[in-house]
Structure formats: structure tokens, C-alpha cells
Image (cartoon, rainbow, N blue to C red):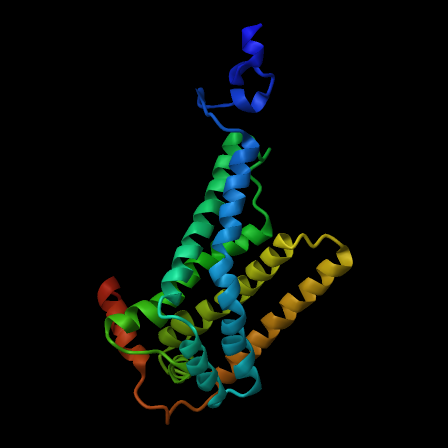
Length: 251
């Protein structure tokens, strides 16, 4: 039989799979491998950036919330190239896109029997909107009004008398960002490194929980700092711009 030696008739069911009756010319395994490789490659910018950022924002304020966080922040900014934010956004966009396609296409291609989403993936979906908000108030809007956010600004935000700014604008999104970010990155690294032994996984879990706890200590210490002598509040102009964009009364 001639068809027995053709791609369509070689006995490989992958070659004959169809979506909505339309055949696709690649196998399930190649689709999964391509998307998985996209996810792995796309995390490289964040994998290089996260240790520096975690040391600066999660650990340093817990040890000394006064001037040390800003000193480390200035050092980190001098080390990193000016295109760091663009590289991070590009990597995160590719990572999220590949992950979503892996879930949706994986279900359609038969890679997954059910549409069940594991906790590690759920944490990533939670992380996306708070990460966008974080970039909005820390980078994009400050750049648009020619200002720069530092730890003095964070202290002013977390100790603000305006409850909307303090809670909905600062503490709540930062807490969600901290919890979901540390868990997603930590569990993702555990998965990429192929950690399967229960004892090793427990050590990773302990490290993730410990870093999260230290991060919350940092938030509390920054919130209790005296911000009355820190100069003008950069977030006043930032939130005013957000209010103009959303037409929301924050008072």
C-alpha cells in the first residue's frame, strides 16, 4: 500500500489529528515541545532579574527599612541596562502567551484530558494583572510625567492617610504581587529543574514560604516608617493621572 509509506498513512495517529475537522500538519508532541521551550526561554530575563529585585525589595527592607533599600535600589539601577524593563515585558508577554496557548491548544490537541489548571498556573494568572499594575505605577506613569519612584515613595504610599491609596493602591496589590510572584517563580524553578523527590520539594516549599514571610515583614516595616520627612509624594501626581484616565473619584 502506497499510503502506508506516506505521512498521512504511516500509522502515526498524530499525523491524522484534526481540530474542528481541519487536519494540522504537526504532532502533539512537537506542539507541546515548542510551547514549552518558549516558556523556558522567555523566563531568562526574569530569572536573571528576580534575585536582584528580591534582595532589594523583599529582604533589605526587613533588615533595615531606613536608607538601605534606596542605596541598594540605586546600585541595582546602575548595574542593569536601560532596556531592562522592555526585556522583562517582552519575556513576560511571551511566557504568558505560550502558557495560555499551551493550556488552550493542549486541550484541543488532546494533550490534556481535562481543562484542569494546577495551582502553579493559577498563581501566574493572578500575577499578571497585579504585575501590570505594578509596572504602571512604578515605571510607565512615572516616566510619562518625568518622575522616578523610590522607596521613599513606597513608604509614603503605604502610610498614606488616604485609605484608597494606602490599601487598594498600595498594600493589597503589593501583598498579592508578593505572594503570587514568589510562589509562581519558586514553583516554576522547581519544575524546570525537575525536582521530584519529596524531601527536595519540601525544602523548596520552605524556601518559598520563608521568602514570602520576609517579604511581608518588609511591607510591614515600610508601612510603619515615618514618611513625613521624605519630601513631596510622587504618588499624588501618579494617582491623579490614574484618576483622570479612569474618571474615578478617589477621595
